[in-house]
Length: 190
Image (cartoon, rainbow, N blue to C red; front, side, top):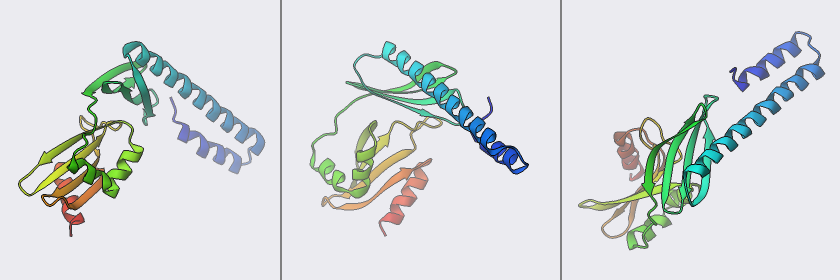
């Protein structure tokens, strides 16, 4: 299928070379309208498949990709998160995580006060968390499950807290390698 982004320049060229603007752009708008109707129908079919597969669904997040018949899927159930894709109308679940509440510990309370962590938690409905203790600091990491790419989840929020319970540095954003993440965290602590 030809991508929607193809039609706008074509309509502009047709209009520029003398095509009737009314007919040209009403045709463009009709194509866009049909495109959105098809996308909504595809999304409803995916949701129907997910509801048949999982119990106790609280939220379904479906995001389009650049490929017309491929979608990213995140399902928030009462006790688990499911991450997958829909390809050509078939839902494939790639990862499942137990839904573990964020603990009410001192370290988590401090991390939640950080502006990066706070911002992440305000807009990310489907995430998992990790806390690692090192010799000189704690690392609190929140991982957004909506954006699985090449087997990992690149959108994260991380906060380093020293042993005196002071925030050393933090970062929210896209990370595709641990080395780049550590470099960004070092830059943030300067």
